[in-house]
Each structure stands twice: as C-alpha cells, then as structure tokens.
Image 1 (cartoon, rainbow, N blue to C red):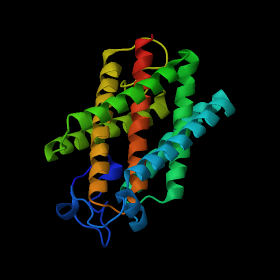
Image 2: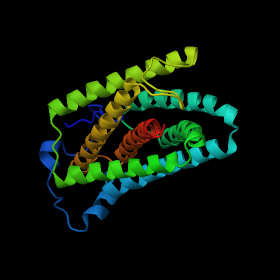
Image 3: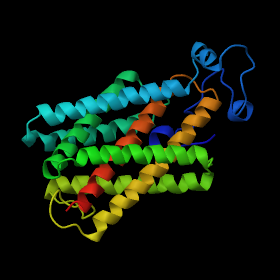
Image 4: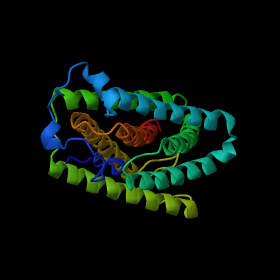
Length: 268
C-alpha cells in the first residue's frame, strides 16, 4: 500500500475497511456497475475527489476565518500567546490524528481553529512590519501548490518507496528541529538560530533552513496528491476524505508560513 510522508496520512490501515477492495484488485479499474461513477461512490460511501476538495476547502475556510479573527479582534500583546497556543495545539492534534485511522469532524474543526490562531498571529506580526506580505505569501502558496499539482499530473510523477522514505525521514527531522527551536525560543526569545527575527539582519542559516522547508513542503504536497489519487482509485471509505483534507491543510499551511518567512528575508 502506498503511503504519504505526511504523518497524518502514513498509517498502514488508513484505507482499510471491510468490504473495500485492496490495491491489486481495484487500482486503475472502473466499477462494473451501471450509472455515473461519482453517484455510485456517494451512494456506496466511497472517497471521491469532490469530497476531498470540499472538505479541504472547509478546513482552509475555518483557518482563514480564525486567522482573521485573531488578527482583527485580538489585541497585539496577545498575538504571541495565541501563536504559542495555536502551535502547540496543532502539533498535539497532528500527533493524535496520525495515530488514528479516521479523523472525527469536531477534531478537524478544532484543529482548523487552532491553526488559524497560529497563522493569524504570525501573519499579523509580519504584516505590520512588511505591509502587503500576507497577500504575497498567499499568492506564492497558491502558485506553488498549483504548479506542483500541474507538474504531478503533466509529468505523471510516480512516488516510489525510496523517494517516500527520504522525504518522510527529512520531514520528521525538520519537524523535530522546529520543535526544539520553538521550545528554546520560549526560554531565550531567540531559538537556536534557524529563524531570523521579524526585523534585523538575516544570516545564511535562516535562508537555508526556510528554503529546505519550502522544498520539503512541496514534496509533501506531491505525496499528498499521490495518496488522494490512490485512495480514490482503491475506493477507500468515504471517511478517509477528512483525513486527506487534514493532511493537505497541514501541508498547505506549513508551505504558507515558510514562504511568509522567506519573503520577509528578501524584503529587508
């Protein structure tokens, strides 16, 4: 079974459910029943592309609303506490979701609200110093995601085991480094040097770290697209649409934050 490097989408039993065919029986085959495929899938409770897109849009919509509320309604002195609560909350929920086969809808909504708090607080800090940077980062994220999807489909990119393992190990490693940096930041206000402050000079390490993070986020998007495509082809249970949407939301928000940071470096 193919697995994504995104920890949310990497469980062995992600697509397991009684009554659904394994990959060697259904991947690339069309249903043998009459009628439109999409309608059959909805009736049979099967994961569809429309469901994944809709649920991803819902989660991202909640992230945007929560981010907007944090930026416009929360006093600036509370942005840092909001970022800390949002960051720790999303980290913990991501671990919980990674350990589950399915994602409860309320948990997905809570995650989106916390993710929005993190995004709103970080975006607010950077926007106040570099007006217009949020629009630039959002546009860059959309372009990066669109180009990645187009490349994935146009070049018919295949996700092999070696590629998957390398990206998985690199993603876990960089997540561990970011967690350590976050913990150290709480004590000394500076971290371990992989991030530059909102203002001031930027050394080579923050540039390099953010560039690596952007590349890894894009590679995770490729993994996520592959996971969704194979899940649909294997007629995975419909409840897996929420887990796919969860994984895509995690990756897209990560990509946005890294692009926001690296754009700020170039604007100094």
